Length: 325
Image 1 (cartoon, rainbow, N blue to C red):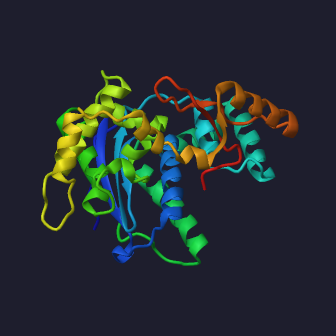
Image 2 (image 1 turned 60 degrees about the vertical axis):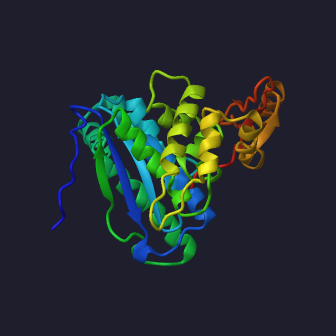
């Protein structure tokens, strides 16, 4: 018999959970391609379920994710449709027809519309629903692409309810981001692509918002400095059987007060030079967006995004055909 999880009713108050799940038999199944797909699906599942990813760490045989579940709010039909479309392929006639039918049913506001709303809302604002959707979607992709069948995960997942503000949430978030350090993969979590802190340093807006939620009154630069100091203070603590941040690195980061030089930020935004569609000045990127629209008669679902470095400004346009799996 399954033990009931300790959860807070989202109708009453927000909640933060630290969740962990391991691959079946703790096998090292996930390569970088798999982790990249899993990372993208994480953000999609969070968007669909209306929860916030504070941070995460995806490793070869397990993962950690810290999730904030906000107080349940009224979700308008337009937002329900947007979230529903996240898991539809609108290039297919059947999915387009389904969306058309749904819009008509919602406009009529009859029993079918009420049933669909309840069905969608039941999957939102709940940590169990979020984890189920995220893990199941990835399992389907992984088994299909690796020609395997059967369960991918050792069990459901473990979760700890965390006080949503203050030191507890900061500490558990740092614990998650420090997993690649403890595993001996890197000595600085910013160097491990598949964790929330590295994503935030690279400029990913949602990753920054997640870590920024730990310090709601601070600007990003102050958030980055404070969180980096916390990471290195906790990571330098020696734990039996685990790697740690070298003491000299902790002292250096403390002397630097957690600041990162523009050159360091540049190195950790380099992924945009590979995964972006266009890179250059804002005017150049906008010109290429317009040319793409004229050539294909398709409006790009993207816009220029700044990768500013001090006094210099670079903009990137995401690859217009790059979709999460």
